[in-house]
Length: 195
Image (cartoon, rainbow, N blue to C red; front, side, top):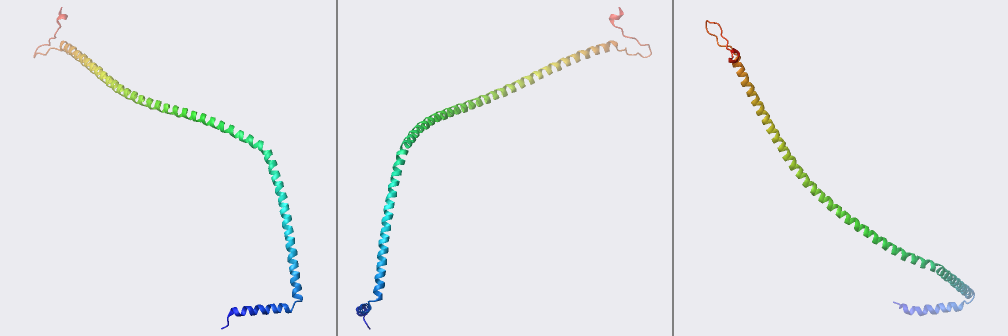
């Protein structure tokens, strides 16, 4: 087996020998390529330098524009800050007013609820009193009607009894005397009529 490291120096020596042996057209191509690469690198460096110079000019113009904008916008921002402070104060004042109105509405709402609850309780009490009074009045009217009916019934019965007694008395007075057998009828005369 052959050692590969022993072959490497031998290959290097043969490549150098071939290169020294033919210095003609290969050297010309190599030199031309090296010159073209050098020119391209110099051009690229010049283009980069030009780009950097133009970017620095543009950056300076941007800085100048920003500075002018800052000087122009500074009064506007100060005014905006002042307006924002005034708006904060106004918002705080409105918030306090709204909170006051809300508290007032809540207090009024609670008072109204209490009043409604009290009125409801009183209405229920009044309704209970009215029911009791109505029941008592109904009982009194029914009792009075019963008494009146009883009095009327009693008076009517008394009148009927008196009328029936009078009718009996009249019937007794006007009634024919019983017949006797064989003789004429005799009428019964009132004692007042005889005189």
